Image 1: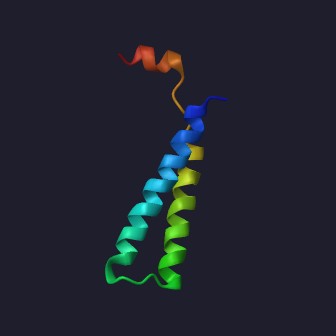
Image 2: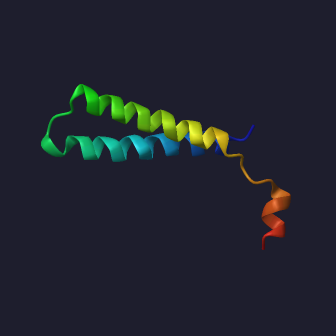
Length: 64
């Protein structure tokens, strides 16, 4: 396994969680429902990142 696989997943989760947290914190308070939304955004990003496979080297070369 390559480290890029893990980094892609971690960054996807962090970016989704950050976007949800910034939106939730607009009123300077995060409710339980907003916390659940943040967690679901992170888990959803991780799930989508896991489900979509990386391109193989042969595919990348043939697309150029």
